[in-house]
Image (cartoon, rainbow, N blue to C red; front, side, top):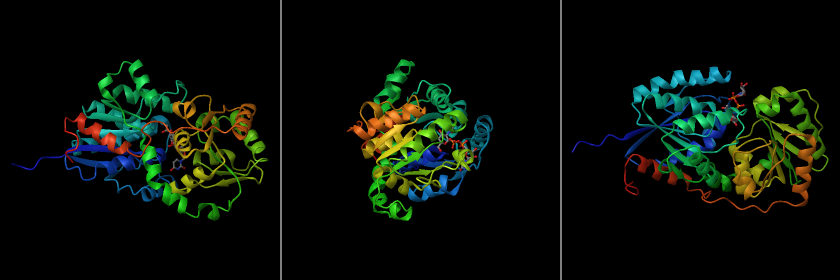
Length: 369
Ligand code: UD1
């Protein structure tokens, strides 16, 4: 018998939060000769510390394709990814494309694939903030509406997709790929000398991250958030690895000396800080999930979240974006920290479940790897 041709599967990553999701997915396909996984890095994020350091820390293999699209407006960036990924999908004759999360790389790759008749598989499907002013919400809605297989991280994802009329058979609860990366790297992260190296020492501290356009591009909102952060810094020092988008906005603002601005950190250093922080103030999506798994108190500087399980059973609280709402949430957290329970299937096995679901999707028996 002639040797079987493996099913070609494109795996797309582009921005920082994609890398910790694509790493366990790539790993789960190692040794499965029924598939050939082809990693495509769009280059949406390209700085050393926003991209390459994650490939190194998470041991992600060298991508077969680097599209090097760089920055631009949403339309420019999305269009550029679409233009550059199309010839790759044509020349490789892929059977499926796996996209993760909700960034511009996710929607661009999914749109090109679906129009070529290539199966689209979305990992982290179904999350909804119900806030259509968020670019990620538009990306999530569009990607889910054109995906053939919807891999969800939490029960709310399944519920949302069913309400939108998706077939129950196309939805699989697989758990959280980001948590796979967390669990695989936590020991090593905790062994690192992060606190010493960053001059934090043994003091209690808060960790801050902020990058959403709605928060940092709106001067009035940014001012409110900074006023709250300044006041919290009277209780404990804050360490803040600053996203490039935010850096341009806060440079020269003269924040007080208990607010320590850092460059973006590598994966393990950041994990270390998340695990050791007394509280995290953030507007990130993924950090809400990571803090829940680590049992660290989290204040989400937004009015909504697409990850309700982190509020319902985790250590996350919605703090809003006004000075008074953030300070109220901070006092509540300080005085009555949430106990928090880790959501079902956030156990480090999501990559294996995705692999099993994708095998089933292509009509392959499970467990024959
Ligand atoms: C993107 C995602 C967001 C995710 C975030 C994580 C979209 C719509 N948004 O937002 O969901 O939470 O990544 O970081 O896809 N820049 C650099 N170096 C880089 C990358 C970006 O300097 O390596 C600067 C550029 O000036 C760029 C700006 O940051 O214009 C924003 O980058 P972009 O990828 O457009 O969006 P993010 O804000 O990073």
